[in-house]
Amino acid sequence: MPIQQQLASPVPIAMTASTHEVEADATYRKIALRIMPLILVCYFFGYLDRVNVGFAKLGMVSDLHLSEAAYGFGAGLFFIGYLVLQVPAGYLVQLYGPRKCIVASMISWGLVSMATLATRDEISFYVLRFLLGITEAAFFPAVIAYFSMWFPSFRLSKVMSLLFLALPLGVILGGPLSGWIMDVSHGGYGLKGWQWMFLLEGLPAILLGLVAFKAIVERPDDATWLTSDEKALVQRELTLESKDKQTSLLPALREPTLWILFATSFLYNLGNYGLVFWMPSMIKSFGGLTNFQIGIVTALPYLIAACAMLLNSHHSVKTGERLWHTAAPLMIGGAALIAGVAARDVPALSFLCLTVGISGIQCTLAMFWSLPSRVLAGTAAASGAGLVNIGAATAGFAGPTVLGVLSQMTGSMTAGVSLLAVALFAAAGLILIIPRHLMARHVVSA
Image (tube, rainbow, N blue to C red; front, side, top):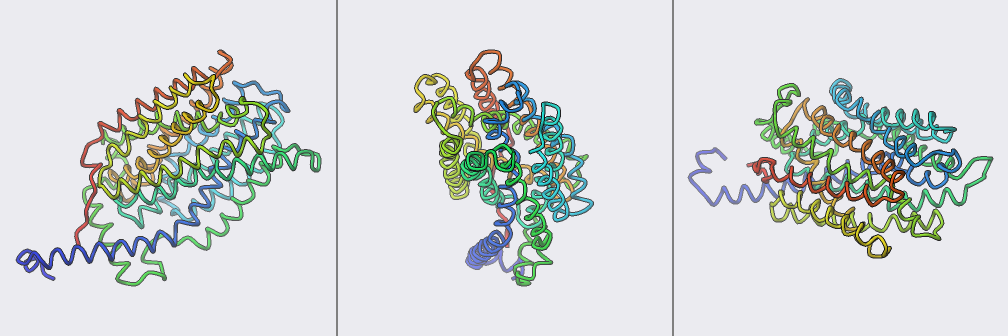
């Protein structure tokens, strides 16, 4: 219908807008069901191979005579390797495309994860953790670039909430799995339980990488399972939305909002990774639990966090409110961690507070990672996501390292967990100063 006729008749406009929304929702639901399951499973094993060292610690530290500080430093070294290649990874995605980068990253990190069974001392532990970070560095920027080729940014918070299910699932499923493998395989063929865990949990990444090479379709125009009308709808929304965004990274570096996102990413991930690498040890301090039981108990907070994350994202989409759906969970999480420290002599109450804290962090993840695509588009999307992810990578090194040093110095985790709570409050404060128009739902006209 010509624009002049639409302006002259309000009823057809409403009908057209309504029809467009129904068609668009159906199209993007179809796309999500087609491309999300494989990426979710891939990300699950990536996250599992990143954090299963927290369970390996239950046996590896004593077997290799590592100090608490050495473990924390080695666990965090993953993120130094990850950090080194974040922005270059964005250019690799631009050069080779998301599919090749996803596949290469998965196969290489699977090989390094399996090789971690050969850890013999501090140095080999440090080297292998560093290499794991390097090999995994391109995966997340490639996924962000991949999604930006399919979804406009106002739909990304819901998509990212599905992707970030891999994080709590990495603990919900991966925790008991890791504990079980360590318990039942210990001593088999002369290997320790934690060595079997690295071997068996690294293999799926290699196999999935081979599947991804065949299964991933990078662009809607190449999708044989979309109709021509569906392809046109997606292309129209993506083109219209990209008009006001930076499409090149260097000009985008002058955007203050990009640096606010960088700092926010650092602060809330300080709490996130500080907890995830030390939580099995926190649970072990309750006493009398096997590795499998520790995995089960560790999974409970993340099961609740997964539900909270989906509910928060759904409610944000339903109400159109983004600011407080992003910031408030971190405030609640920070308060819960402080309460957990205060209740450390009452394990059940402390565990409840820890659960709320983890839920707060997870709720913010999906909301936060829809924001970079509201600032950047085109070739800047992957590199910009990589830049923001440097904040997360830096926090991933700092969080476990600081907790390890403070734990060794004070004999408890109280000071370290309190520091993580302060970081969550600071992250919430930065979110509140993000320009309001970036938090508004962007409505694309038919």
